[in-house]
Image 1 (cartoon, rainbow, N blue to C red):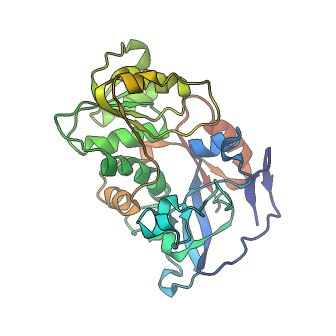
Image 2 (spheres, helix red, strand yellow):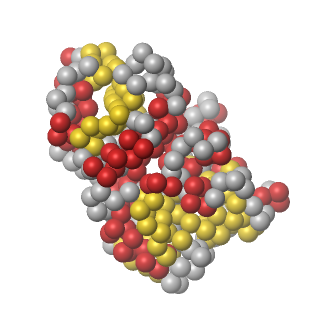
Image 3 (tube, rainbow, N blue to C red):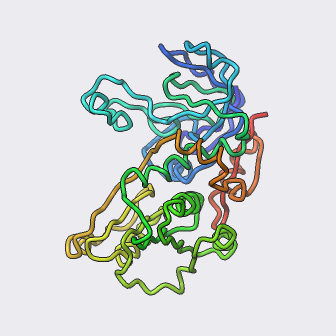
Length: 318
């Protein structure tokens, strides 16, 4: 099969091995996949992963122990878990002690013709949600996870730092709570999307941090911006970290102690909430698509996605 893999360098492989079957696995034909910042960071050494990249996808089930899934369009949760360890038994399966992670940790990903995932990881895509939209279920679910972790309402001032793919999704999700949300970024064309969605936005160059925000969500993927986030959040406020990145300079974390800041790490989220929001047309994901490219253009597509100012690049396998 065809695949885009990273083995200390990025390459397109026309003879990649088919994913081997495992108990409970479902075989999926990948239709489309999205390039994520995590994929780009892996190519810089994040997680020391070698293998087929990709974890945002929509596909069609070819074979499954759950015969009701065969022929259906699905997306999939990225954590492959044991279901038996103490964390799984405590309802924290996304933190399973023996987990593998699709396209990130010990499990080949979705930049390929086929991928395997446990049937329990899969979610059906409604007919009214098209393939372009369905690719966004995984990152949109990650945005909805913030609402599971932090209480927001019209009295809490919220800043989303970063106008990239995830930051724009997060801003839209948080706006649904009625909280006064603003997004801070560097790219006028991205900030213009916020105007389209009636979300306040400001260029980073115009911002003077005042320690006055109740909640700051860092979606930048930058250690330097984390320091700016610490300067924005008020004493005893909340700083939510959505970014992962490879390396970076040492950080001065003393302000977190001095200002008694609550730091919340936020990762994977509720797929059902994301699918429901797409079905209800609450979130605009189509405006985030910069280009659709074929799988065999994968190396070029990754280079494009890494360029400043570029939003979502999709890979199509058809």
